[in-house]
Each structure stands twice: as structure tokens, then as C-alpha cells.
Length: 500
Picture 1 (cartoon, rainbow, N blue to C red):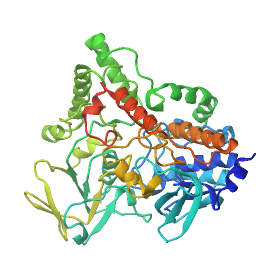
Picture 2 (picture 1 turned 90 degrees about the vertical axis):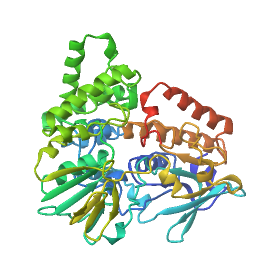
Picture 3 (picture 1 turned 90 degrees about the horizontal axis):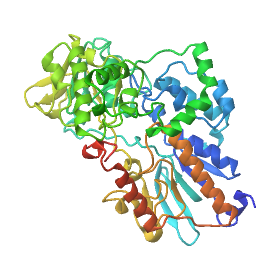
Picture 4 (picture 1 turned 135 degrees about the vertical axis):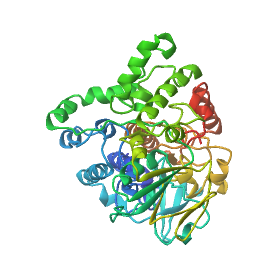
């Protein structure tokens, strides 16, 4: 029996609804079509791309090598697409995802400008009712969330935001029309990965840039570069080995952890290895480092000191350099922002760093920003205030399962899932990259997860199963396993979006 036949007997509407047309949603749609299902994807934006559609702020780009980030499922796609840079910028990435959508004719099953605001499970029909912001309702047997890990932007809660008379921009909701910084007085609030990229670009043309920093980051050089035709040909020939290696590494990155321990080698050997990693592209300094730097405090202190020395070498003013060196967490215990000249920005005469742990922001005024010690006037304020990660996108949809139970209430003390995909009490709800799924080089994990989701749906359809659901014991067991597996890792002791 075909998958679509098995479902059509029990419900009207769609066999499967997918929320989101980003990296996850596009691939999940492709896989569900292979089952012959009637599928609809609801996307809030006007185009595909997810995070690469919304986050068009200056400097937005990969921190994974482009040729490891693209999809691996189609040999034809791998043969056709040429990456321009080792770490693609937002425009190139958005072009790539649009190319994928067009090549596989995915748009005909995507409904744009359609924000899902609620999804309620109906026990009598064993189906989900999905409500859009415009009031339209749809039913589906399977509801699949592809909402992304970093898609729910954290908006600033500073008093007076709405009073500012100049131009305000949030990095996640960056306008499509160009924002001009030439000769302008610009403020950036936030120095996470998004802030680091934005600051580096804005500083190139702004009349004056003031950076408001609460928490400095352990940044490392990106070392980006163009990919010529010959190099792209070599990469293409090695795609099988590239993807196989990503399967074997922590976080699915191309960089494999060094089997040695930092504390087992001589200081000279250790320093030489770190100099080599620091000079190479990408996450090698984080993911390809000694095996003990993220579990042993002494080893972590040594690599943190190495990176701190690099910051002091690159920033001319010693006082500014010290403000840019984290004191409350060690290197790599948060995701490491990769940068291209970020620290040198603070050597420019038109750039000022304000430490808001010393002089907190009190409010936004009609003309700028007031801190505890003075007022600043600006033409443009940029909010790089991050995301409500992991569960934030779920919290913004009113999801109710069996007996009207709320997913948000169920997760109020922390999420519990089975494999990061299923939740007990929420039948036929499947999450691509949900809480407690694997994180890292996103598309690699997406393909594994969407393949598993597709296999589960195929299994249910072939056996005429109308309800699939995790058990409570399964969800607790998986959650406990994830927690136990992370014990001993230093990042569990640090507040970040990765740990909640």
C-alpha cells in the first residue's frame, strides 16, 4: 500500500505539514515526496532559506566550510554547484538554497507568508489541526517542525527602545534595502557571534562606531578565501571522503579532535601546535584541538592563555585588550565566533568600546543611548541581542497534545524528548533538530534526522499505523542519556545558548 493511500483513508487535508522552509524544511519536504505523500510546508517569510533568509546583516556567513555545509543527498547537485568562498556569506548561501528549491521543484508545496501560530492534536481523528496567523486552518496526520535552533530572535528589553528617532535594526530582521553607514554615528549592542560579524563590517565605513559589550567572546580567525575552479574540482572529487569524515567527528565538522592531550606534550610542542591551528581556516582551533581542552580545567586554562595572548598582540591599547578577553569562561566552552579582523577594529580611531558591566545601559533616548555615566547620540542603533535558542521557536507556537496538554507547560522545567525528535503525549509530532538532537555542522545533522523521520513515517504507513509516539520512559531515558553524556564537559558549567 502506498504511503499516501494509508493516510488518505483516515484524514482530510494533508498527509504531512512541515513548519519552516529553511535547510531542514527543504530537505524534509524532498524526503516526504519520495513516499508519495501530500505535503505542505508553511513558511513565515516570502522566500526559502530560513536563517539565511532572515539574517542578512552585514558580515553574515558560515563558520563551517561551505563544501561541508551543502546537502550531500544529490550527486547531481554536488556536481552542479560551485562554491565561491571557503566560508560562504549570506547572499551566496541564500542563492544556494534557492537553487536547491528550484532544481527539485520544491516551491509548489511551500506556502509563503504563512506563520503557524497554533497546532492542536485531535484524538478523535488522530490528526493535527494547524492554525495560521491569518485564520486559515489545515489538518494533517503528521506534523513536522523544521523551525531551526536559532530562529526566535531575542528582542531588546531596554526601556525607551520605541522612542529612538534614528534608524533601529535587529540583526535577525535586517532590512532588505541597503543600510548606509558612511558618515553615520552607529551603535552596536551585543558582541556574540552575530555582533562580531556585524561590528567588523560596520567599522569599515561608519563615521563612528560605539560597541556596547556585556560579555566578551573567545574569537578565533576565520581565514576565509576564494575557491578557484581547480580547487573546486579537487573538492568535488573528494566529496565522499569529506562527508564520511564529517560523520566521524564531534559536531559533524571536518576537523577531527587531536588524540593527544595538551598536558602530555612539551610546552614547545603545545605552543607550535596551537600556532599552526590559529593560522589555519575554520574551527580547527576549537574542534581539532587536543582532546583534553574541553574537559580538563588546567588544559583549558593553557589554551585560554594562548588565545588571550593573541588578543593582546592584536589590540594596541592594553586596557581595551583586557576588556575583550573573557574572564568568566574558558576558551571553547561556548561556541567560538570566527572573525576576520575583529580585534583590529578596536585599533581604529573611529571605534569605541563600552563595557556595560561597568557603565550599564539605562535607557534608549530619542537621540541615542544613556548609560550610567553619560549619554551618547547616534544615527543608527543595531541590536545584536541574540536568540531564544533551542526551545524559543516552539514556545512561540501554541502546541497542544493529548488531553489539551501544552508543550510549553510540559517543558517549563526543561525539555524532554526521545532522540530530539519525539515527545510523549504529542503523537505524530516529529521535530527535525529539536531539543537534545545533535548540534554542530547543521546540514549534516539535518540529513541524518530527516532521513530517520522519513523512515519512521514510512514504517507507520506500511503497517497502517495511525499514531506514533514516544513513551514517557523513552523520553526520560534519552534526556538522562544526553545529560550523562555531557557530564565532565566544561561547557555544561557555562551559561550559553547551547546549554540554555
